Amino acid sequence: MFPAYCGGGSAALNPYYVVTPLQAIEDKVSAENIRFTIGAHSYAELPDLAPTLRPQRISERAGMIFTAYNEPPTSDERQALEKLELDSSNMMFMDFNHPDLNEVWYADISGYLVADREGELQLGVCVYGSAQLFVDGKLVLDITEKQVQGSSFFGCGTQEETATITCKKGSVHEILLQFASAPTSKLKPQGVQFGKGAVKLGGVWKINAEQEILDAVELAKEYEQVVICAGLNKEWESEGFDRPNMRLPAQLDDLITRVLQSNPNTVVVMQSGTPVDMPWLSEAATLVHAWYGGNETGNGIADVLFGDVNPSAKLPLTFPARVQDNPAFVNFRSESGRTLYGEDVYVGYRWYEKLASKVNFPFGHGLSYTSFQMSDFKVELDGEEVVTSIQLTNTGERQGAEVVQVYISHVNPSISRPLKELKDFQKIDVQAGESRNVCFRTSKRYACSYFDERMGKWLCEKGMYELAVSNSSELREGDYHKASFRVEASEWWDGI
Image 1: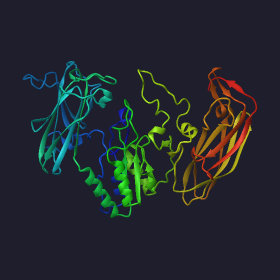
Image 2 (image 1 turned 30 degrees about the vertical axis):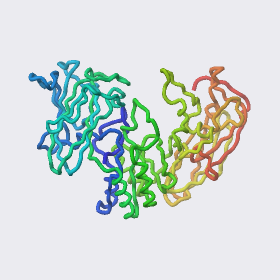
Image 3 (image 1 turned 120 degrees about the vertical axis):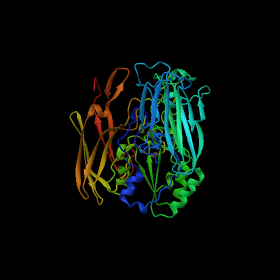
Image 4 (image 1 turned 135 degrees about the horizontal axis):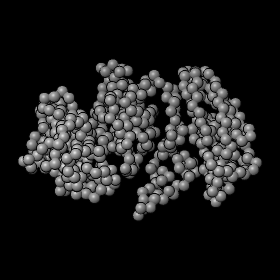
């Protein structure tokens, strides 16, 4: 398993350790009671190969040897300028330097693969510069003259080129990647250029996608409880590019749909930093959106699944049903260097509510293992403040936390405004059976104003306003309270 613990680009960090969901679940339930199957691959580019290699033929450590030269591999007078042992084969040479390094320089990146199974291993290379890949001295990939533009390395690199080798269990294979720096690239960079070049070597054992799904379906039939871990990772969500759609990678939707059909008692754990299509949502009894949890990703997921932690998070964005419903869909991308932000102030829940669009999950939504009820709702103006009070009761059988949210709408504004806007919120921890009074004191200016572009000032416009207290932006019957208050005179003001 390749854990999804962070996003890509500037969000990507090398952790000291990572706990996978499988490891964490095995810690909760003895490993002999758990069976795991891949189900489907979900990578955008082949996973980093270095963790499965050894720097020397006889070595217990994982990694590769990186050796830099000024001379090409064809030179008989090569002298090593620098030799490093690396634990990753994903290399961007933004800050790599040596006092004697030429503008055009070369590197040999080598390691040994000890096959832990019989099968076909797929190898892949992306490069900003040029590269050749050798296995046991045989050239299997040549990305020197013929290069195809890809999205790798912020648009500077090639698309991933792949080759397949056949291995027997226990066989040892020498992997050698010969790299040449950025000036040898045949591509015109599409993004931000960053100097000396980049290269990535990936690899994964090939699977029969259909057979893996069939195996998962049959396995799901044998067990009372099934957990599917799916989603995106730092290759799909990074800086320097946008996702073209909301679909999950490869066969994941097919996998989830068919496993849910084979065993409805299945929990879908989704890891992503953004919304994804969920064509199977109506069939899923339980969905946990886990985001990227860092080193403790697995333990966090397992603690929620097994009830050791009562979830209390709320969505910081709306999950639309379709990418076409997104407020930026029509204006997505730039035209001749010009970007139009046509959605104006109608972003997020403001957009979906204005169009009455059906969404998968509204902004502020989140469930708990306990239940809450709100009562004794009051709203009044106290000078320059809107004062809201409400009683929150934990009506369930265990401690939990609820996020009480305050939304305000102008009943009859002089301009087009969102139907309502979030103005305040509090997360309240409540013991089982306990009631707590929640009070909000919100500045009337902040609660009611919009920016008047004609005057170049904020305008707190007179009129009637409605204030709603809810547990999400969707005002569901029985889950919200609403009251009105009046602003008697318009007021323009500066600053924040």
